[in-house]
Image (cartoon, rainbow, N blue to C red; front, side):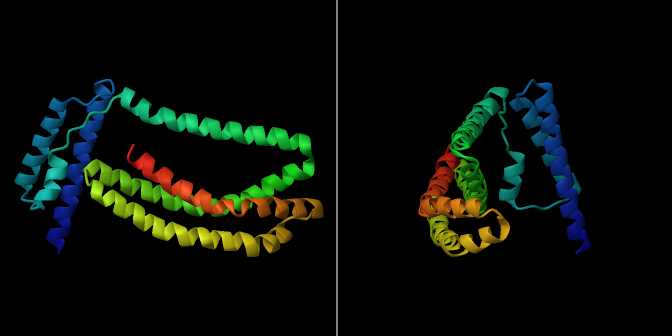
Amino acid sequence: VEDSNSSCCSLMFYIMNYYHYLFLQLLCNGGTVQNRAVRIANYKLRFTLRSSGININPTFAAIFCTVEVNISYKRIWSIAYPIILGSVAQNLINVTDTAFLGRVGDVELGASALGGMFYFVLFMLALGFGTGTQIIISRRHGEGNSHLIGKTFDHALYFMAPLSVFAFLVLYFLSTPILRAVIESNDIFEASVSFLKYRMPGIFFVFGQILFRSFYIGIA
């Protein structure tokens, strides 16, 4: 057991050094890791593993010994700028909503903020699961296992549908007593309940949108 643990620790140590070497090459080459540098690191890792007498699964070895990295600032920016634009657009929508509601009245603005936060808590349930689904779909897409993407999406759908029903039931039955406990103003409380009353049916569409968003982002 001690020999096995020692071998595993040694393997992880060499793998960490391997990726540390690639990262240094990334910095030194102005944002691009040259294939020649990658091949040199591959040979170093293979020689180190052989000389240490570490026996590993061939598939596992192939993953870490045949990596070809091609990272550039242009590729990073091409991935980052749609996310930046999406975040900016969402904040502009929030500012616009606040500006309109502020002109309607203080009660309406407070009801939108408090009712919206309660709604957002349930929204985060779907967003967290959708993020995990997106990661798995991206991995399957990168591996070239397209047939597994549909299976992952189906499993996420089977989970997301009951979760949306649960979120709707929480909104329908528990929103009033919970808001009553945290809101002192009767006017804001009644406006918050009215606000959620109109937003309740939309929870099904929100969960569906998150699921398809995870799918399309995952397949790039």
